[in-house]
Amino acid sequence: MKIGFLIKDDIRHENLIDGLKIRGCETVSYITRVQLEPIDIMKLSRFIYESDCDVIHNELGIFPLVFNPWVKTPLLTILSTSLSDDDLLIIKTSCRKCYFASVDMSIVPKEILDRTFPVTSPDIVESYYGIYENIKKETASIDRRPWGFYEIISDKDDHKIKRITVNPGKRLSLQSHKRRSEHWIIVSGKGVVTLNNNNYELGEGGSIDIVKGAAHRIANPGDSPLIFIEIQMGDYFGEDDIVRLEDDFGRA
Image 1 (cartoon, rainbow, N blue to C red):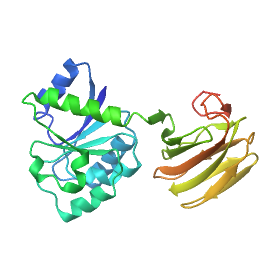
Image 2: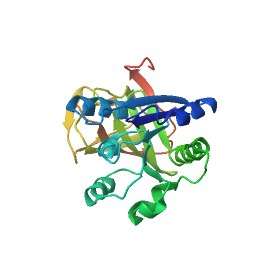
Image 3: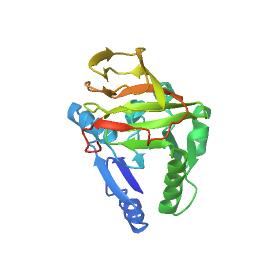
Image 4: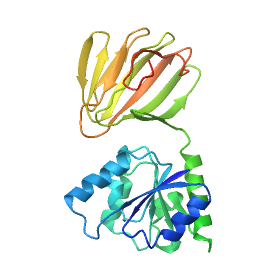
């Protein structure tokens, strides 16, 4: 298990990090200055967006949750004080991969009680390790790819629905399917869809149909994540029904 840390002081977290390493965890830390400068915010967002961690342990307060709706990695924010109305507003826009932990559950608003873990064990390593494991199990439906990740929303005999996130500057392979057609709907961001020999620019709310056998791909030319819903229709939805024609990551 790989844990990322967003912290202001690596000395204060030395025992936790060392204890996790003894348990076989890999750790990586992003240490900020007390007063965040614009360059720090850019580096912080890059750390969150590009993380390949299983969980990010956040002790920088609510601010990093601003990036959370678009990232693949679960973010565990440690609460030590009561939250303001502005904090709660940010939390309401955060995605389901946003979790919390606190040694004092009395300060936790009722709106996030179902996403908050109590830190109860006197052994801080044992307590947080257990929380990380629980979060990892809850988010197991997330499948990571070199271009981003996807979540399976529904998987039935006659259809499959995915929520797909494409990282900035990345694109899926040019591919086709023999046993399914697809319908794509853009949720946020902008994408360029290649369908056979044509390119189509799609923004929020835009959609496109992809018939069986059509060569297709989507690219994210922007600076923010591209999120779209993929609805598959057919008689088989396995990942082995992908014929890759071109791929930026050597998988064709």
